[in-house]
Image 1 (cartoon, rainbow, N blue to C red):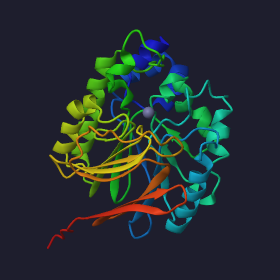
Image 2 (cartoon, helix red, strand yellow; image 1 turned 90 degrees about the vertical axis):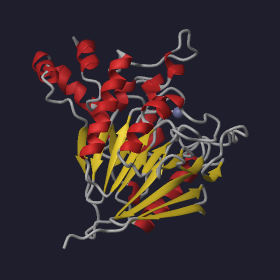
Image 3 (cartoon, rainbow, N blue to C red; image 1 turned 60 degrees about the vertical axis):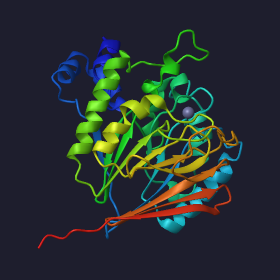
Image 4 (cartoon, rainbow, N blue to C red; image 1 turned 180 degrees about the horizontal axis):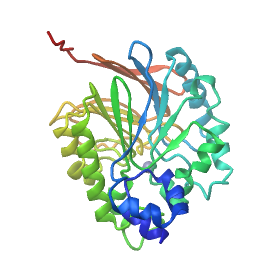
Amino acid sequence: MGSSFKTSCFGVGAPFNGVFLALGLVSMTLCFSGAFSELTKFQQGAKPDGSLDLLVVGDWGRKGTYNQSKVAEQMGRIGNEMGIDFVISTGDNFYDNGLTGVDDPAFEQSFTSIYTAQSLQKPWYTVLGNHDYRGDVLAQLSPVLRKLNSRWLCMRSFIVETETADFFFVDTNPFVDEYWAIPNEHSYDWRGVIPRHRYIETLLKHVDVALRESSAKWKIVVGHHPIRSVGHHGNTVELDQLLLPILEANHVDLYVNGHDHCLEHISGITSPIQFLTSGGGSKAWRGIDDSANKDGLRFYYDGQGFMSLSLTPDRCEFVFYDLNGQVLHKWEISKELHFAN
Ligand SMILES: [Zn+2]
């Protein structure tokens, strides 16, 4: 019963799985009736003037080693200066193989005891990376972790609504053919995802509908895998084919990801979308793909660091920092405000 429930309710916030499973048949009825067919939404407060400041970090969970703690320290400093409202994690939260369970000490060693600055005691809206799927993926999605640390808000796909911008978090892992190959050097925890084609089809539909219904001034999509990147992993062709057309049709402003262990900004060629990689939370130094198409490439840094994002109704600014907190790249986008007479 448990697995069939999860199969039927992909795309729905997994932290609810435990609740649904506990409720048994009643929950299954609700699920099949479509009552929970849309992506879960969080309402996130902004500052009194409507502005919003946040940090983005990815590919980080290494128990403080490999400069994770140095990046965390600078995130705390910049986060304090900006008065950030929340943090986004672009996935690969716990290396090398996710968490072993809700009692895995890596949660404390790589998250709670690393991001200790006062400014970082804000919601951490978090997606899963491929390394997270190599462990007990339901552990990261479990409300047990949220009880251990209330900052932790990890789901497969969900929406964060603010006064100024809407953020659409998309679970990109099931899209990648390589992870489904048999034989495979890694094993992935696909509970809640199979059958794959239905998961992807429904997820794309939900994302499309949610984007279309959004009247936010800024639409920002977050996933683990890059659509465009000139880094080690490069473009994710499955997302290029299946997700990008939906983002372009719905006038998405930013696509933000991790996976490639670098900091990177590429401007869209076929649309105004800005592609931003923030995957330098600890892993880095994998080089640049010399053969990659570099059209629209504005910035590439092959080391550790993170990104900030500041939004007002008519202005969006993102900044990339290295592990010393030095500004490496800054970009601003403006939108005209239209007032009704
Ligand atoms: Zn990854």
